[in-house]
Every structure is written in C-alpha cells, then in structure tokens.
Length: 407
Ligand code: PLP
Image 1 (cartoon, rainbow, N blue to C red):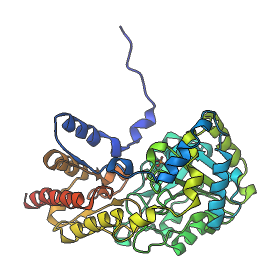
Image 2 (cartoon, helix red, strand yellow; image 1 turned 135 degrees about the vertical axis):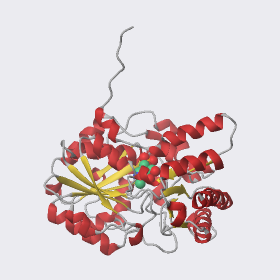
Image 3 (tube, rainbow, N blue to C red; image 1 turned 90 degrees about the vertical axis):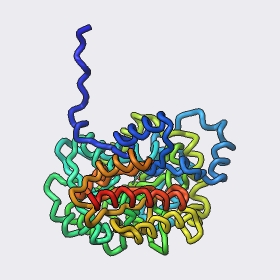
Image 4 (cartoon, protein in one colour; image 1 turned 120 degrees about the vertical axis):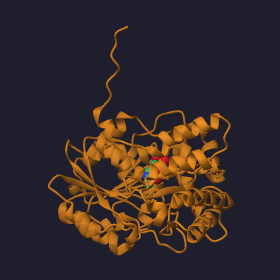
C-alpha cells in the first residue's frame, strides 16, 4: 500500500515531557528483563503506598449512585460552593462558585486556560525550571514561552526585575509555580507582591499553579496569590492529586479572581472550552467538599516524624555528606533538585548521567533539562519513597559520580 506516514503537528517537535519519556521507556524495558528498579521520576503518591484520606474515599463511595450524569461544565455546584468558601477563607476577593472551574486534573485546566487566552505569537512568562506542561501547553496553544530564570544561588526564587525586563507588547500572562516543582522553593509574600505589581503595570493575567499549596516543611508559609492579586485577573490552580494523594481521580480546579471588567470575555472563553469537553470526572468531584471540610491530612506527613518529612531529611542528609552534590533544601512540594558540582560535573550532561544511573545502578531520576532548566548539572528525585530507600538511592548516585570524578 502506498500510504505515506501520517504527518503530525509540527510544533510537537518543540515539546518535551521526559518525566514519562525516553528514560521511562528504557526503564520499562529493563523491568521486562527482570531488573528491579527504584523509579523516582513521577510524583505519584499512590505508586509509593500513599492512599487518599478515607473520608474522601467514603464521600465518593457513599454517593456513587449519583455520579452517572454529566455535571455543569464548570463542575458540581456543591463542590464549587465548597471551593469558593475555601478561597474566601484564604481572603480571595470575589470567590464565588461562578468563578470556579473544575477540571480533569490541573493538567487539563492549564491547557484549557492557555487555549482560552492565547492568539498565535502571544508570549507567556514561564519559570525556568518549570513543571514542563506549562511550556508545552503554551507552545501547543500557539504561544511562545519566554522563560525567566530561577537560579539555585538565589534559592530558586524568581527575580522580579528580570521578569519585568522580559515583558513585551506580546506578553499576556505570568506563570508562577508555588510551592515549586521541581525546585521546592516557596515564594515569600513580598516577592509575590512585586510580581503582582508587574502584572498590574503591564495588564497581564497571573497564573498561579498552587497544586502543592499544603505541602510545606519546617514552618515555611505558603501565600496564596489571589488575595494579593486583588483586582488583577488571576487564576489560582489547586487539586486533589498531591495534597490529597489522589492523582488517579483526575480532579483539579481553578479560581478566576480579579475585577470583572478586566476579566472580560475570558470567563466566557473558559466556560465555552469547558462545555466543549462536557465536564470533569464526576465521582472525583464528590470528594472535593469532604477534602476541604477539615484539616488537610498532609500536614502530619510533612511534620517531623511524618513520612515526607523524614524522606526529605534522608535526601538533605545524603546530599550534605556527598562529595559531589549541592542542594537548596526544598521548603515545599515533593521533590529534591540537587546540582552536581566539582570534578564530577566536568563535561557533565544530565541526560547521560541519568541514563548511566539507570543502566548501572537501577535508579531512575529526571534530568534537569527536562524542566526547561538552562543548567545541565541538575536532576530531580521525588520524596515519595521510604527514607531508607532514598538513602540507598543516594549511595548509588554517589558511586556513579565517584566514577565520573575519577575519569
Ligand atoms: N502542576 C504541577 C506543578 C505539577 O507538579 C503537576 C503534577 O505533577 C500538575 C500540575 C498536574 O497535576 P494534576 O494531577 O492535577 O493534573
């Protein structure tokens, strides 16, 4: 048959998602050959033995008979009421159910909101490193990601002067990821206020990915952006995947805050795109009210003695005794993002290192370049395994880096 291979969307060549990419495929091949791997590539709590809180499971199970129909495109009214009340408790202005959009994970809402916003050639200010969906979704919605640099030397905090210097007449939005994946940085209030002022001066939409909002350690304080943004249009994203350990339920949400005149047709655009995909997974929506009704059970896991806290301690201590690694201690989120230094970093490439670690030591990490980082000496591990397993991982990493330092 003469049928030329199907053409695909050209801009896909600019897009990467290596968290589940080539290295993950190689890992599956090795597993099929019988190798036992330690896979630290995905922030997937359920894969490491974490469970969603029982009261959330019961909230779905108890109402399963009501979950057959589609819901409103923006989401189940009781869930949106609960979310609006949650954001009002946080001090967000105008947080009403009409301004809440529930989606199939934050992932869907990132894509949907950029699709609602962008015209070809519009620019979006995205952090580097970032959670790579932000860059990818900007590209696939015909936009141009313009990266602002969050440097390790600066605790991975953004520099507002740099952000403002990158604004052009085509800039439409500033993306923030706070607490940050992959770096673990948690942004102080004054920094957020400066970024809000930039958005106000240049009339930009703020897009604040707060999916790790309650995952903070050692007294770090998460500051929600919506109350600081006031009248400036702002999308605040959150969900059940991380704080409630229920990634598989595919439930995320976004609050659209800000002055109604400044938001204009954007609200309608979000609603229309939501309607085209009908609604989010309905059983999962029934857990939202239960989730927001009480103490976020993640707090105990992030406190001394809690599993995430101890996992983070294992990573911090392993890096502290390493001959080759440095790391800004993550103040939040579920990842460590170390940098390779000294002799081991000579002619280093993060992908080659990750492949060697996988092939020779059976450990899968994600190279820093996968997060659109400019550096080539970083990698990300998730804090979800047991602390002892993480210590073992870092012993194996040290062996690879020792070999490289001596080469
Ligand atoms: N945003 C960030 C910063 C993430 O780390 C992730 C998942 O790892 C997502 C969004 C996607 O989350 P969801 O499971 O809600 O689609």
